[in-house]
Image (tube, rainbow over all chains, first blue to last red; front, side):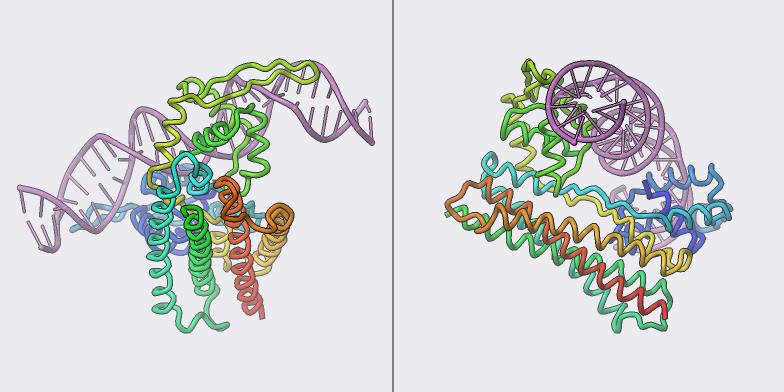
Length: 182
Length: 182
DNA sequence: TATCTCATGTAAGTGGTTACATGATTGC
DNA sequence: GCAATCATGTAACCACTTACATGAGATA
């Protein structure tokens, strides 16, 4: 799939270690892509083997050594080609909806509890995104700013809008379940 | 993951053949889960092997024979247990956002074209959902209707809200790209 | 003494995609 | 004759998860 290109994108922006990339997945890139450290290290190994990236070992006295990866010319070409191509929509997979279809089997109460948990998780997530928006992006990027800044803001916006849409559905769903209980 | 349980859910509602299940994925269940026929048949084989489902071959004179699957007692217990348990949020993966981060590499024009394609695909999708909503669910399910009907409607609503949120973001993103071009 | 952060990996198993394969019937 | 629908599968490969593993320095 495209984890390969996510990793390439990050290395293209800034030469860095596998550990740094993992941190990006936990933080900034995390609101539109997730990956575990095992995936990242395996991807780095395979990208390195196909010569899309190169690395140099950087020794450190106080911390373990790290490998600093940078993109190669072929790598940048490949990234360009991929990013220019058409985008296929990613497959939909919503576990909660499957469970909802089993309403008669599990009972309404169980579903309500599950939805409540989703509400609080989504609200927390949204709160994080909104605080980033007001801390980092107020005012939002202006025409004079770099394309990069605009794009990062747009990815954050995607996260925010997604959460809000999710919450709206969760509200509809909770109301429906309530009416079914009486 | 939970493809296993999606298949179980469908068989639990109504004993049916693999082919029927594949059709469900292309149609109704399609707006919150996707699966290819290969996946479905493999899942049926493995569910059958673990005795969560049973099948009988139904011979047909005009069409090829089919295997009609039904859920077993252990299968229903397993489904109940899974559906009652906590739901983890599914990992986020949005390819287009990764491409957006490469704005400086590929250029704004390319991204605009990609977004336009996403807009038209999403609009088509939304139109389909909305027509189902007005054809099948007007008026929407009332308190007296079956839980199943309410749940099916909610899954449709999830699809609609998702499309609308996506379109809202696409609009924001397109505007941003326009301002960057000048 | 125990846990956290930094930094890297291997191994086994499951889930998912792509391509290949068959064979009968119906409709244009 | 060609494509579509019905109905089932296999094989190879790629993506992803879970668990296991190491080892040093920092902090409580």
